[in-house]
Image 1 (cartoon, rainbow, N blue to C red):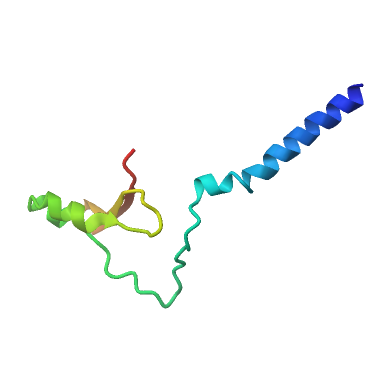
Image 2: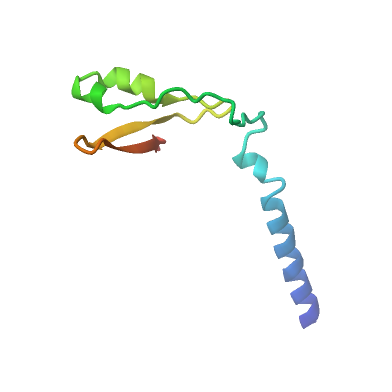
Length: 98
């Protein structure tokens, strides 16, 4: 009896952990084709947002920092913020609104 209960518990654990990477994976990741960046892709110039913010061009900074990654629909923003002008020190961020 004890052996049967142990076997049933192990079977249930195995089934659930197997599905996490199988059937339930589709709930987390879309089925669309993913774009993989290769070494030949040009990511463009880095976006330094501090000059836009200092000039009061907040909407332009928001528009420029918007990230689009098809097939994902999650809105996000990314760029660099200057943290120390004297040393040209900048911090990268990638923001996902909740």
